[in-house]
Figure 1 (spheres, rainbow over the protein chains, first blue to last red):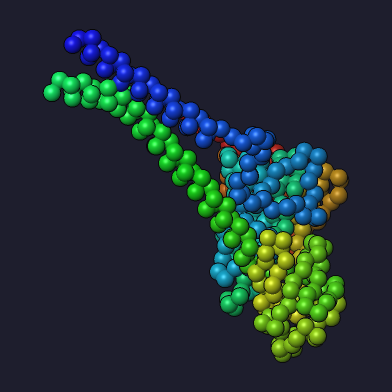
Figure 2 (cartoon, each protein chain N blue to C red):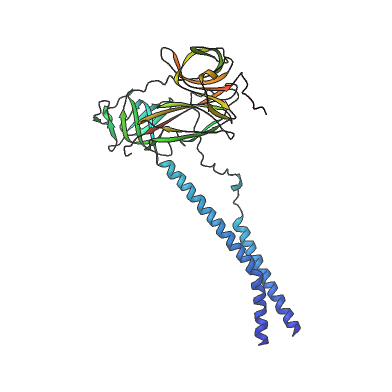
Length: 151
Length: 221
């Protein structure tokens, strides 16, 4: 009897091992990447960076200036104000002109800056200049149009 | 009874062994599936967002075909807009017009939906006067003279003489922040960033003292 029990346990263990191996093999095959897949470059995050304008005057030191909002240039909006946000070198002086005014700000320790801008009806040209302590500068232009018409 | 118990024993043994593996596999498969669906949805949303962006092009018409116009935008970059029968065209005299009324050289503001190629389907097209050039000036330099006017000398030794007004916003860079200050705090030798607008003489609208020759007072015990 003892022999039969031992045999039954052994058979059960063997059966379990076979099924486990089968599942493990199937799982491994499913996970395997197709040839060439590893060479593909994953898409970059959807952070939009406005392209440098022709009027940019980046100095030799290449000061970074990224406008994070508005996300795109030549944007059409139906709201009367926007918040212009961006990043540059921490501590840089950021001068901004828009249709209805201008402002000088200082980028914080993370390099971030932001300014609420009231938009004029129609096109609004925004110019953002970032100056470092030595007077090197970079300029970016953004066009944003405000219209209440249904487009 | 004993025989049936013996038959059940291998089945129960194998069940325990397989159970853990199956549970782990199904949870991993579900996660992979969720990630895959999430990525696909994000890609589709990004495409839709790109495809239906509402934009406005500002510039001069450089060429015109039967159903499209090409504009040289404010950065001298070409932009294309498709004009359909649904497009509203407003001429300079505020009268409604058609594509035939538009000519090369017209300055326009055209609004509509752009596709992923940045080609616009025009919804509303306005013929407007070309905007006046923004003549406001950004200056970085050293204050070389302070009086009824101030003189700012740039690193290239160019001097700009400008005046301040009661509405000039003057700030000082202190502790990494812009702090409001008075015009009397502007000293010769200070480095400043200024925005000025032209007139009979440049008028400074905003000025920030970036670095000062006079050390800021320190607290003494």
